[in-house]
Amino acid sequence: MEGVFAWWSALALGLFPIVVWLLWWWNEIWFLAPVKASLNGSKIPPGHMGLPFIGEMLNFLWYFKIVKRPDDFIKSRRQRYGEGVGMYRSHLFGSPSIIACSPAINKFILQSSDLFTIKWPSTEIIGANSVVSVNGESHTSLVSPLPYVLGPKRAQSWQTMKPRRGVVKGVRAQPFNFPGTAYHHALRCRRKLGAVFRAELEKRKQGGDSASVERNDLMDGLMQIKDEEGNQLGDEEVVDNITSLIIAGYESTGMATMWSLYYLSKSPDVLRRLREEHMEISIQKKGAFITMEDIKKMKYTPKVVEETVRMANIAPVIFRRVNKDVDYRGYRIPKDWKVAVWLRHLHTDPNNFEDPFTFNPDRWNEPAKPGTYQVFGGGPRICAGNMLVRIQLSIFLHHLTIGYRWELINPDAKIRYLPHPRPVDGAKMAFHAI
Ligand code: HEM
Image (cartoon, rainbow, N blue to C red):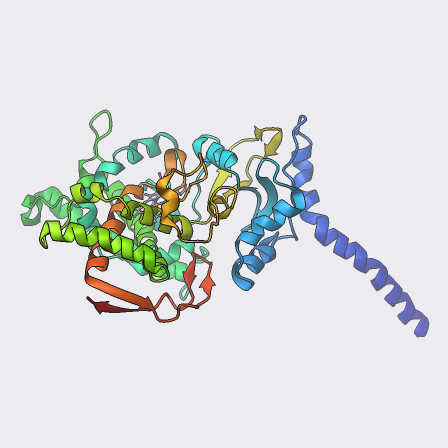
């Protein structure tokens, strides 16, 4: 009996290191072996692909969720593998991945939209015809008129459209479609929302009462888009694009607004200077609404806005799918892998922004070093709402600074970083009219 026990113990002890070794190297062997066969002198970016199935997700969650030091995720890679060309291999969100985190490589990826395309897991929610989902020529023809559709004239009307939180939440949910899941709920909300927009669109096309009104809103803008041959968008394209603009714009604007108040409440000198600028405008306007002309004349406000979106890092990482093997400065980015473009790292790297965690609008007295400021992405898919959000923030800060003072209820609340950075208490604030 004792002999059998000893035999099994020895086997278990002997197998243990082999199992650990296999777990540690499984992904490396499984994903790298086919790539290595066709390297032709290129190298695979340094890094480690983590454990089978989960890859490096535990490590990612450790930094983002447990210790709440998200920037150490990249820092630890830089310390281990060096800065190199700013690429590391990994396995994240269920896919072999290249992490890109230098100004040059990020720019290269974002500019090369033929090599790196976008693929959403949940096109059913976003809409297959929307600017956010389509690639290539369909994308170009949709994206070019967007600055006009989202222009200052429509900034007001777009804001009044009722957002649908259910839909917004579903975009990030795992696509499991059964009752009780966020995805299932989002699909139902999406159908209802689509029906509301379709009915309104039909009314306007039929030229009923409401069609005679010049609304100049988002739907009107999308209905007026024409391609080079004069073709207008189809109904589903209009509906899909309204939905996707709400998804892309609603939460991001809310977060930018929240962070502006958060940082200002912690930076009394900045707030004082901002208030001075807006009080002066308010006196000149004698209580009238501010216009684009007033916004263009603001000097300090644009710096506060830029610093807010830099610090807030609302879109910390964006993803692309690799269409074919790409070689970049001697390194291979393999076909069908994902690329995680780590925008956040650029904005928190002291090499790019001195004292990066200090809210300092004056740093915008000089433009950022080339390529280091990518809060709105870059290349053909640069955020279509980047000007709109800047205008919205300027208007919002105008009204807030001339009419109110505010303070955080829990100024020391911890920050949660997933899915987007925000204080754990939701940044509760007390407002007082002045
Ligand atoms: C501070 C607020 C915002 C931030 C930080 C932000 C950030 C971004 C980023 C990083 C991208 C690029 C995504 C990618 O390349 O994969 C993007 C795309 C996009 N954003 Fe924003 N965004 C903001 C506000 C808005 C607003 C207000 C709107 C519209 C109302 C909007 C509409 C879009 C659209 C339509 C795209 C997709 C463009 C395309 O694929 O061609 N965003 N945004």
